Length: 307
Ligand code: FDA
Image (cartoon, rainbow, N blue to C red; front, side):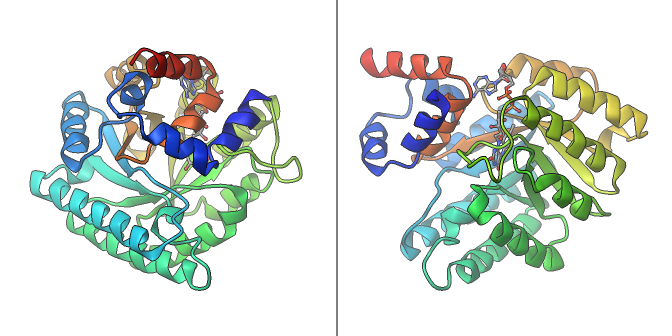
């Protein structure tokens, strides 16, 4: 119930405007978000890289409704990737992109706009010696997002896609996309979805395990995105049963969530990538983190009231 309410609030423009008026550096926001600027993101990348963690950087923002904003988000990625290139961070720092932030939902030619912008970001990533993973948003965008990833992979074969185990369709998508050269990030899914398209409760975890089996047995590069200790243990077991070399798959977690576990896994010889958001438009991202763990909401409210 609280999860659904919070996820509804994630799309509410009035609540969003009020929340964005709060400076970024406080409490729970600072725990999950690197900061507002490219330099803030790079500072955190350097720290994480020095600890042996891989990183995927996300410029915060989603659901762009004007072309100018899609341009600005693209420019921010190009600036970030130029800096990644200048510092030689390339192989271990990649970027994650939400297509709705670069125009996918614009009326008329939104998909074409998003594809064109994703191409220029992918070209900059390639120049920086790295790659792009395309985030997955709510189920109404899944087909469009997967078809844009398919287009991108023709020129940029290492482009990654995200699949969400809560969607009933995802096991079949895993079967279809687990082929050689594919990079698939498997997560549970973070949006409010209707029962017709999505599982709930323990069925999401069971589906996650089924999907993981397909990806681990497949020829691609599985990216296991979860903080769930049981699923991490199952991933380690499946990797071993499928004789996967340590560099043929990776674990992924969000910045600020189970940081000690991230470091423990690195020390144990596993590849771990941290999803690192930065930018001013943190509202939707943060509300989804609260929906996952309501105690984050209490932390956030405490931060707001102790100004
Ligand atoms: P679950 O929510 O069951 O949590 C398991 C445990 O992890 C909890 O008991 C708690 O200890 C800890 N935990 C989880 N969330 C926490 C939080 N917010 N705060 C504090 N502790 C927390 N989703 C999506 O729809 N599209 C996408 O593109 C992505 N991309 C993505 C990338 C990466 C690298 C990750 C790790 C996750 C995503 N997600 C996502 C989010 C994902 O779908 C999911 O909502 C979260 O990862 C939470 O699910 P868990 O698998 O961690 O399990």
